[in-house]
Every structure is written in structure tokens, then in C-alpha cells.
Image (cartoon, rainbow, N blue to C red; front, top):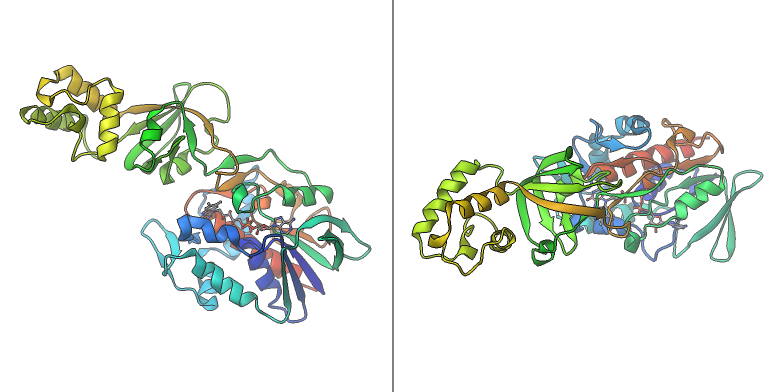
Amino acid sequence: MVIGIIGAGASGMAAALTAAENPDVHVLLLERQARVGRKLQATGNGRCNLTNLHAGEGGYHGDDASFADFALNRFGPEETLNWFSQLGLYTVAEPSGRVYPYSDQANSVLDVLRFALEKPNIRLITGFEVDRVKKADTGFRIDGNGEAIFVDRLIVAAGGLAGTKLGGSMSGYKILRSLGHRCTKLRPTLVQLKAAWGGTASLKGVRANCHAAIYHNGNLHSESTGEIQFTEHGLSGPVMFEISRDACQSGGDWVCRLDLLPDMEEETLKTELTRRRTTHWMSEDLLTGILHNRLGRVLTAAVGIKGQKPIRNLSDLDISTVCGAVKGFEVPLTEPLGMDSAQVTAGGIVTAEFDPETMESRRVPGLYACGEVLDIDGDCGGYNLQWAWSSGRLAGEHAREE
Ligand SMILES: Cc1cc2nc3c(=O)[nH]c(=O)nc-3n(C[C@H](O)[C@H](O)[C@H](O)COP(=O)(O)OP(=O)(O)OC[C@H]3O[C@@H](n4cnc5c(N)ncnc54)[C@H](O)[C@@H]3O)c2cc1C
């Protein structure tokens, strides 16, 4: 039996290795890019957050997020780490539950997968872009690179649209739609939000630990505490990824309120800043030693205090205004950055048309799908790769069955 797999990303490699555990099966792994796992290599800022010890206890989304439960229970974080350990990867878990390779290099994850793919019953063809798939009398006909290939079973592991520069594309959705499947609306998620405040550009690269809360028309949309990062266009960082899901996707006023000193009461800050009036410092240094220098300066300027004014000349009202800004700085938001900047696609191929226990299509026998192409997306912190491993393993396990 020949199993064709479209896409040698995280889920496609997991599916290929699992299917090839049956020595009677031949796996044909087709990848349009010159190398396998290009996106995987860029994950986690080059560190690859390959799973999260809490994945499976919630943290997944989609029109029917419970679709992911079976795969995550059968092949969850513990099984994933055992599997990677057998492949030769040494990992380390952070207190938050995020797991990284001990080497801190995404390359290590990719390397052990690449080496494992070197099996007699796996044939990898890179630089092969699948253009079309048709149901044949038995199995499927795959067209690409000017040739036709016939396989008995097919796993579509072509990923989502997010991260376009790293290979994200509409390809998988198109292939599955051509075979009769429906696709939901696609949206970027785990993506930075654009701000209608010029100050973010001058803070580009600055990170801050804060409590961030997103409001829509004055009502709380989501909130969390952690690290944000200012970017040229707006707000990014783990906490923004955590709370930005579905933000700015509808009209109205969207605002992010930042408490830049969540561990300090406003009164304590006021006492400290008032004490600074006895120093010879200038206003631009009012928050020096408390916040990142650049952030402190931009913040005091944003509330209208001239940087070259001596602190001793600041009024009680000036001090209160600065304290208010530190404890509740409001950044108006406009829209999420596009798919090319997003880490993950929300939405995808309708999961009701697949069997969650096998990943097989309910419409086309012998057709399987796994990974981001399906309408499942996870929280930031290793959840998306865990879905790729879990669903890829399950698809490979069932596709190889006689
Ligand atoms: C910058 C960035 C950082 C991320 N960091 C993390 C992280 O640290 N932890 C985490 O859990 N998740 C992270 N993610 C998300 C995670 O990488 C994806 O959810 C995951 O890779 C999805 O796996 P997949 O196999 O479905 O798709 P992919 O890994 O995208 O693989 C799909 C493959 O299919 C190939 N392909 C597509 N169409 C065709 C075709 N027609 N013919 C042949 N080949 C085709 C593509 O070239 C690609 O190699 C990150 C994403 C990005 C963009």
C-alpha cells in the first residue's frame, strides 16, 4: 500500500513516521519547498516550543474544539515527549509547562525528525508542489511538477495560511475543497495588533511585564498578565498573543489598557515619584529605574510633560497623571496584522466532515487530514505544534491499517 502525504511540516512528518512503522507500507512524502519543516525551524523564535505539558486540558479553538480531544488524549504531551525522546531529542520543560529542546534550537527538533525520515519505506520528494488531487478508481491521482502520481491513501498535511513567508498557503484548503470538503472563514491568530498610537514605533523592541486588558466599546474582551513587546506597528508578545484572539475582528472601539507596574499599588508609585522631586533629575527620567528607560520617557512625553523640565518643578497633578499612565495606559487598537505575520490560522476545513478518532474524511474514504489545515487552533505556548503531532500521529496510524 502506498500512502501519499502532502506537506512535510510538523504534522506531515509525524504522519509519515507513524505510517512507516508498518514495514509493508510505502510512504510518499511530498513537500513543495526545498527543505522539510521550514516553518518548524522558525517556531518559538528559533527555539521551538514543541509542546505544553497542559495541552489537552483546554486551550483549543474551532467551531467544534472538542474534535481535538481524542487525538490529544491518545497522543498528548507525555506521549509526544516519549516519542521525541526515542527519536533522540532531549527536552526541558519551563515552569509554565512550555517544552523546548534542551539545545534551545529548533534545528534539533527538525534534525531528529529528518534523520528518522531516512527509512527504506519513506520516499521524500522536496520541491514537489501538488497542484491537483483527484479521486481515482482505487486511491488518488496527485498532479504536480508536470507528473501524475497514484497513491492508495492520501493524508493532506499542507498546513494553514499563516506565516506566508515560511510556506503558509491556501493550497491545503483548495485541495480538500476540490475533494468535496468545506472551509470556514480563515482569520489570523497569535498575531500582533496594530495600534493607532505613533508611540509604539519609537518603542520598537521594548518589552515590558504588565497586565494587559483589551476592551471593546468599553467592555472587557480579554485580559492577562505577562510580557508584551512594542513593535513598529503596535503590540505583540506572549500576553498579546494570549488575549488578542478575535480582537479587532469587528467594528467599534478596541483599546488595550496596560498596567505597566502590576505589582505596585498606584499610591506606592505616587510616593516614590513625589520623593523624586527632591532630586536634580529631569522629567524625562521620572520613571528611570522603574520602567525601561525608553518606555518611561515616551510615557511621560505622551501625557504632555516636557522632558527637560526639572522634576522638582512638577506639580502634584503632573505626578498623578504620570502614575495614572503607568497604571492604565490606553493604546487604541485598529486591526490584527495580516496572515503573513500571524503564527496560526483560526478556521479551516470543517471538522464535522472528519472522524476525530481516525482523522479520515467522512466524505471520501481513504482521505485523511491533519494539522493546521483543519479548523482547530491552539493557544500560544506549544499548543499548535502539539495539535500537529497528535493529529499527524493519529492520521498516520489509521492510514496504514489494512
Ligand atoms: C513564526 C512562527 C512561530 C511559531 N511558533 C510556534 C511555537 O513555538 N509553538 C507552537 O506550538 N506553534 C508555533 N507556531 C505554529 C506552528 O508552527 C504550526 O501550527 C504548525 O507548524 C502546523 O503544522 P502543519 O504540519 O499543519 O503545517 P506546516 O508546519 O506549515 O507544514 C505544512 C507543509 O506543507 C507544505 N505544503 C503546502 N502546500 C503544499 C503543496 N501543495 N504541495 C506540497 N507541499 C505543500 C508546506 O510547504 C509546509 O512545509 C509558529 C508559527 C509561526 C509562523
